[in-house]
Each structure stands twice: as C-alpha cells, then as structure tokens.
Image (cartoon, one colour):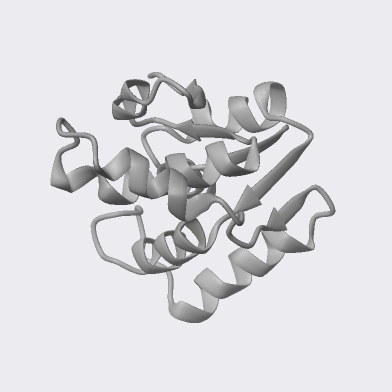
Length: 141
C-alpha cells in the first residue's frame, strides 16, 4: 500500500512554521507507508497554494515551489502516480451520492484516486471519514 498525502499534509511538511508541521513531521517519520505519492491534483494544489499569501508563513515563489516538488520526487520512495484506469467509475459513483456537498468534489476525486489504486489517503481533513470504502489516516491535532 502507498500513502497519498492530501495537499494540507504537503503544505504542513513544507513550512516549519505551519501550525501542523510537527504533526505532519511525526507522520512522515513514524506513521507513513514506505512509499508515498502525488496525484496530479495534489501536485497542482501544493504548487498553487504554497505560492499564495496567507497559506504558508511565507509564500514561495513559483521557482521555490517547483524546486521543493522536485526535491520530493528525487527521493526514491516518493512518486508521481498517473490516474488509475478505474478512477472515473469510482469518481462517478462517489459524486452521484445524494448527500455529497458540492464543495467536496475534489475530495471525492482524491478518494476515487486512492480507492482505485488501493492506496491510503492521509489528511488533516476529517471530512474524508464519510467515505466508507477509503483507507484513511486522519492526522489530528
């Protein structure tokens, strides 16, 4: 099994001044699976949000954000994963749920990605608990 950290985990790992940096670091050192990965959405979210004011203690330049992303991928246990073949079916099933709020469509994509690939999703976001078929590690503070 491979871990797919949510954007909020990557951001907390990047910024030593982030309110959840210690928890994210403890996960990284003690609770993470041997292999971790970015999806396209987590990669884009990490790059986009790390360059925004008010997200990190100091917004990164685009070059800095790309450099950090490349440093992660240079580690042999961190990968970029293409979409699993069955992601669309899982995504369709999750988003057709009558009780899924519209604000959770990207979350449903992450869940579909993790389920279709047989991976564990890791996040500070408790909303992922609503997805029963998901292997989920909730990082609490």
